[in-house]
Image (cartoon, rainbow, N blue to C red; front, side, top):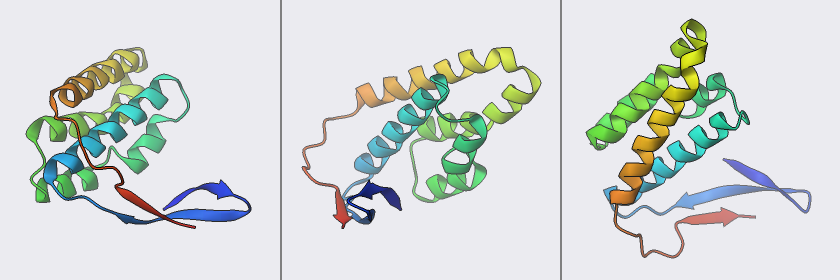
Length: 123
């Protein structure tokens, strides 16, 4: 996964060190909040978010990992944002805001992670 370019070289994630399910879920929620924030600010499109995060394949993988139902529900409803945008575009901002509020609520209920480094960068 390409992170960014620095000094003419690509930096890539070499390893992600998850040790417990709650870490996985917290990182997923952080991704969801970031994606929804970018969508709210019109920095990414609904279509792009469908490619990265809100797609049926993601739901299948999360079910296999026994992800919390509340998070699965947010991702599932995130998959519906394309339909909302196509059919009722004026309802899209409220739908995004609602998913954002729910993801933030779940984040607020989680314990603080004490691990210092969870991604190893290959330079």
